[in-house]
Amino acid sequence: MSPLPDVTFPNFDLAVPDNGYSWWYVDAISDDGLHALTMIAFIGSVFSPYYARARNRGDAKPIDYCALNVALYGKPSRWSMTERASRSVSRSPQHLQIGPSLVEWGGECLHFAINEVSVPIPKRLCGEIRLWPQAIGTQQFTLDSGGHHRWCPLSPCSRIEVVLSEPRLKWSGQAYWDMNRGARPLEHDFISWNWSRATGAGEPDSTAILYEGLRCNGEDFCLALLADSRGEIEPFDAPPSTTLRPTRFWQITRSTRADKAQAKVQQTLEDTPFYSRSLLQTRLAGKSLTAVHESLSLQRFCSSWVRCLLPFRMPRIR
Image (cartoon, rainbow, N blue to C red; front, side, top):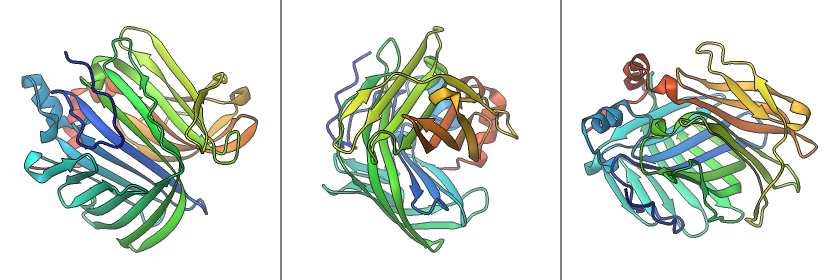
């Protein structure tokens, strides 16, 4: 298997191996705390049941399984993730077009032109979103012992402006941007993980990032990083682990790390059969902070009953 190529920022045209993936992730919380969002642009949609079936038949081309996931939280709320084949995808180092929606880097900001339809209730989700990084990082972290999966926190300290026409909504706030990429499916190397980021640790604009999980070979991994507004990323001593209450409906287990193990779930944003997304009230670097948190169970994802449910949230247009 050929090694993963180095990242050249932002390079949406980066080569992705057969059965592999790249995704660019953004999350944000409005300054008034009333709204939040996540956006993930996938080449090789790692959680796609269609991509999983294709991989089981042999080598699958990730460009044939692309999607832009947009999740809008608060009032109003929307969730969309329509998967599209290669004929509906175009890309260059600076742009990624997936169906009618566009992600592009203009040199100063990351621009999303969104034109999607939400599920399960079909509603338009349209508008412009711009993210301004305070600094750009290129440091990569290997997540598995074989070097098949890498993570790059591109801009943990960012500002965002959301202007939507459908639904009508406008807000600004603090944001986070990173990238994951891999040469083979996540479930080949990971059983589960927990990830979180909290802005305001250390100096006012610094972001604390916690990334830990269990690999299929039984090894644990844990990253505790502090990213400042200059783009510098430094490790810090991981605080104690604490178990959070599981999600109410699907009972996804959640955990995090916090000073004196002081953390609790403030709001569950996503309660799905194999992952959760939450807002936490946590304590890091001696400060009380709000964290965006995700828990992922790859064992659940591999269950046949889960993959039968996924098309209801992830329609595909060939």
